[in-house]
Length: 562
Image 1 (cartoon, rainbow, N blue to C red):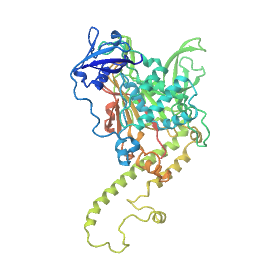
Image 2: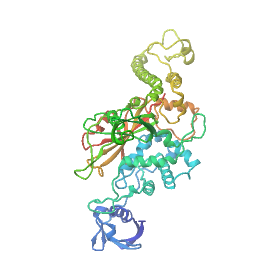
Image 3: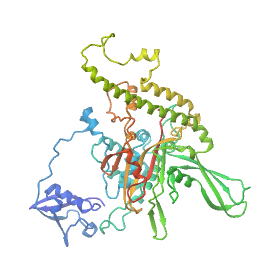
Image 4: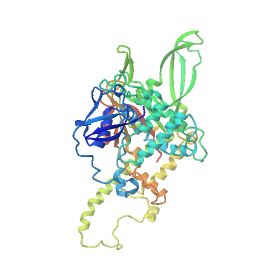
């Protein structure tokens, strides 16, 4: 129902106010407070039959256009302007931008919308999606299903608003588009809040994720290395896996096995009394026993089903199946068992033999390269600490250095020294030298089929970048929270330096996101509009085992080659 214009009368004065019957009375009282200065806690809004309460049902009040409400209460001090004037991003200098953009913005809960807020924050961990949305808007905004197109257009606008804002954003327009495209998210709560009807019901974050990914199929994919236009959607490129399923009849060994190919947007992790690790749960979901009609036996028979991935996408979604139907109580209940999930995931055990052969050379080399990178970071930190410790007594020396040039710096000449001799123990070349060398070696090991498949994972190795958790015991209640790894939203120091070199050192354009150290493994916690840093050491608390936050949806990103 659209908002209506009403009047309020207070202290002999009449004010015009907008009343939205779809919002609780507390929202209307806040609007009254803005024009009268009467705080809601000591405000009485007179309606037919009594006083407007926070749990009053607007349908029983039946407000009409132009209706006048009497307001009783002593006005307090009117809202003051902010102590500091609002400064927009384009007016900030580099230091102010760094401070303002240090934490991403949250999303306002619009009434049981934590499922959507956490889902949207997790989707922001896919930077390729931002690029695809920009090109989609310019090239083919009218393509595909109209409701899905309208939803994706609002998603693009919301992401841009979140990038430009320093305060929490209310995704009201996007929420309306979502409910228009998928009416299930407009379902009203049966019980309501405090017995009040007209409240939107809590929804399932996994269903929201799946429907959003479905809508994103209208977005064309990114071009390949040759620059040719993509013949797949973005979702098909970066988020869709391919499974080969083989069925063998246990009761008729001579019956030829049947094979089918299926595209999947997520992997399920089944949870039972024996499930302790995510990989075990995924294997249980991929393999199993089913009953179907046997053409050779002419009756129902037991078949063994074995499924393996023949394509790994760049972004692999894992659904922890924590809600199951219970016949004894007639509703879905939460499985609270503790299931450990890895922050680094090797999917090599889940793929076909053919794909494994293609993945292993680059996978093995990337593991070696990552070990070398960690060792180099340790050496650099140790060298830096030693240099800092040695610098203090040198500063107190009154005698100049013994023989040598007049300049004091330690580092050797950049080009000549590197060419004439290799770094000695404790000395390292610039990190870019090693990374370029590793890039060349790794790209040579990537199988040509995987190299040509834009959006696929070339090594089978993944980093965990986003988590959606559920808190509570009931499937249709509780609270969802999003977690996103900092490195998914900010470039590492090495990546930022490489991007600056690629840009030619130009200072024009928008300010880059603040860079983080490569050893920074911390996360952001998005609890609706409250955003905080979540230490990596606490990730294990999301394994489950009780009513507290348990991992429900996991997003893994293919490890980059460099």
